[in-house]
Length: 132
Image (cartoon, rainbow, N blue to C red; front, side, top):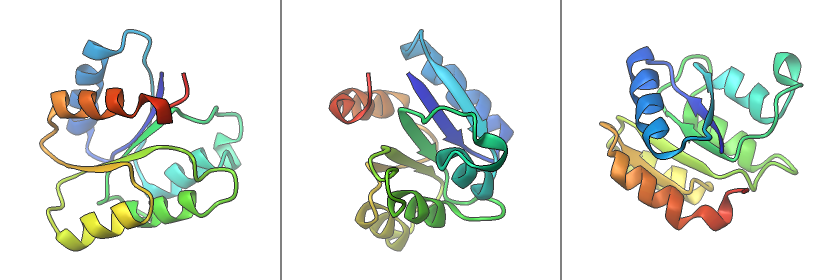
């Protein structure tokens, strides 16, 4: 499984990687730390033109350059990319952020600290949406 983690906090990157590797032995984790690079990666443009499309995106909302909600909108509204499953992982507890994310195509919205069992369940329950 290839996952793109969009996260600017290095500690969260390491913790998420450790947690995911416990459940997925064949995990390929790509990491970008700002919204602009996330868009470029997902649209396979600029320095990321050679990158393969991920099976799943774990997207923080509070990002430098472009925030996660805008990343979500761009990807979901780009022809040929709207099918990419995106899970929001954030510290934001704002109902408006959650509503916006879910209305704009996020698979689900998980508040940090990361509940790994919940994340595993969500990925497993939605495996039909994720390329094998």
